[in-house]
Image 1 (cartoon, rainbow, N blue to C red):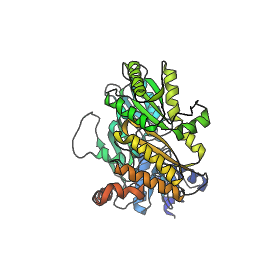
Image 2: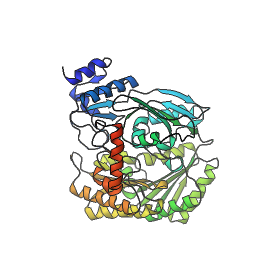
Image 3: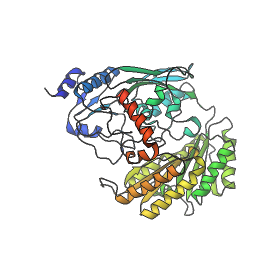
Image 4: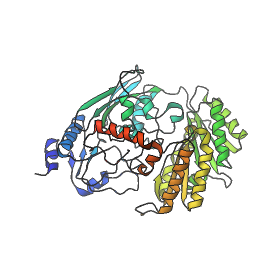
Length: 453
């Protein structure tokens, strides 16, 4: 009997998929990275399914690649040859939502926007807001420590995670963290698992923090600038003025042109950058108007401020179109360097210079309020691997980010795509410590091998 037959027999009917065509659809994420040939896919519907799968994998020394919705942009969920893909997309229960404690307990397959909508029925919200919030899952957000548009005010996924239920590589169940807002008992294992990209364990439940939803609809502005340097200066001035925006996004000319070609947003020839900001404070309209004045003082040629929730959503909608517009132009190598906010404009200029020097098309959007930039390197559809000039430009971008005191990834994770640069940031001591941690939780190295570290 084949090892996978034992797995099929130990799980409920139809939990294991072995049809090659179906397997292929679960073997890739949103990157261009070509997958290998997995043995099969487990469609887990419960924690018990995960426990059974990992016990079987440990017994037979079979690598396991955990997977959510497959919206990742770093290759962390791309499956190699001979692995089992463990899909958690069917684990969609919101097991508890407590308005009194302002927490929710959710399974990993819950769609991010669905949790937010459920919370808002009680006057609450789930703050993490990745651009893919309508299709990405909480489990995937946890695995990569996703950020999003609102992280300038509310932080990234880790900042909203109180506790986890994790199945370890050998099938043991580990509970980390707490239900309380405070707690310092023992090491912070919750924080360790958030962002570990499925290399330490498989998250089967999470206790997350909810926050009070804004009392009034947020007010939004969009400002046009003749240079990214002026836009970056406006970001610094807004933050220095204590405006506390709930969202602060920057789009470069290449991104705006891609959106305009797709949806005709009326892009002016002189516009080289756009800043989109929002305030969800009680005096949000006044705060948006204050940020409007700061933008004008820093060289904005035009600033529009929303007067209705519909206008606000229309302005934010421009930002959410960014990645889809770029995908229409070609295959995308998506990166997400993060630099100190004071270096934002310098980093944008460095990206533009790298694009010109190497003859590469790079379109950049940024969570400007916290210095997290997403330069997208665009090349021809159907190309299996980015051309040499794309890798050269990417190398220059990453080197510059580190030189400016930044990091290789702010929220997408390392996955497969950033491993070639990891040693530049981590260094040998950090690598040794992280490999030691990996060995404690996954001594056989079967959890998402070749990823993250």
